[in-house]
Length: 80
Image (cartoon, rainbow, N blue to C red):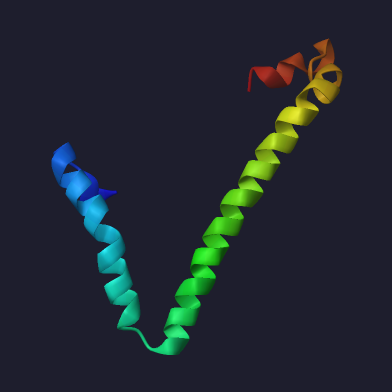
């Protein structure tokens, strides 16, 4: 983030103040916009959870698909 480049102390100060600043900005919005912000925050949380589940599924299936993925016929694709 561009806001946090530079001195670590400055970044720490911004990080501590950020929730309060964000709450103040959200509080100034009309109710329908606050609902949009809440939906967006929920979306971000769900997206993170979905990515974690996808990564876990990929790790779990790597062993099962190892024989399919690692074969001499497909070695040419590894060089791409």
